[in-house]
Image 1: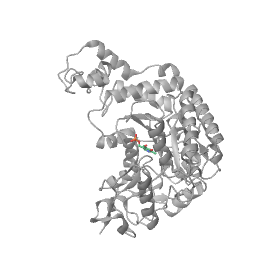
Image 2: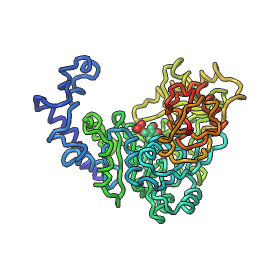
Image 3: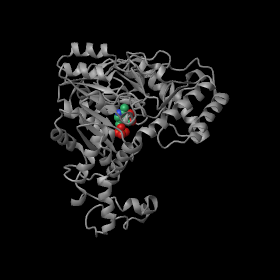
Image 4: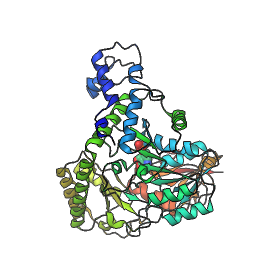
Length: 482
Ligand SMILES: Cc1ncc(COP(=O)(O)O)c(C=O)c1O
């Protein structure tokens, strides 16, 4: 990384120049720097609406960057050790989907762990690629999915030598990392690409005490949520390319679904955040690691809770752990993760990232302060004292291995009927069902609905998980193949 060059932020600088020029706008957006929408100005401020502008020559164009956006992308590539970086304004979802659409066509196979974010399987609904699922091992005590073992990837490759790519979570939402370096070596030796979902791994690029990043491990593409740990505005993201990728082709793929009116608020936030990370990322994430380790020790000292960390590493299905993640297993105090999530929000005004069946995840980042951590620890101690119950009837698993009988695209577009949930046992699902977050489907199109899955859905609903994916918003009925 060229630290002198990293001090620049070309897109942000171009916007500052525009602000000084007082150009008269006869172009969109129609709010005309806020003048046509005073309520919006009151909400966001003049600074913000004043740079909510459309593409114009001095500001370049995201669909075909040739000047300031291109320079900003090149600086991002340099900061992340990539051959090229694309600014993305459709969330990491758009980056994940572009990786898949750029790597496989209808009927081609891609090896994926089944505990992927819905955006991965959605992409296969769109382009007809065929998933070859690797069922992750489940951690026996806490019920969460671990990473893919190299032996599992090897077996999937042996059985599917015609697969074109291997997809890897680096890390999972809970912080688990597979052996990415070995997976890259293995996949490349079989002429398969490696695509990494780094929605939760932006910080891996800026502190070498953290697990290896996709680009450092030699992956071909990575989808990086700058808006999560990187500090940029919600929905802004990066798609990174390794050497050997055809940048022009990937750009065409991105432009199949990308807006032609990309937000300069989002793009300039990527530019500024990249500069921050390049300048101060190592130090900032060092502090984040310390805060998360401190919180883990304090929460474990309360008793009952299990705030897990790098002791989960076992050399096979968990080869690295992202210690910035503060994931806590709550079942032993007799509460589902989602119940602790609701209590924290309703009784203590603390908003955490998610609560699922047995765990909560508090997201610790460069914006946190130690006094906020103390408040979280205090609230958890209180919750245990006031609300803990007998653990008997709590569900144990976050992951139920699916039985796949049709591709996501075939099942999604098939002739279907809607049935009450109780009557769907044994039928093939044609839609997604998931708790969001984390957004890992319990059911995806093409999978057999089982008694265990029906019970899981009922239990998650009863406990108050926020669920989505189905045509029926109440999830009382499911679409199944006729
Ligand atoms: C693992 C994973 N991949 C991709 C995404 C999609 O990111 P975004 O919400 O920015 O579209 C998420 C979102 O939480 C995620 O958890």
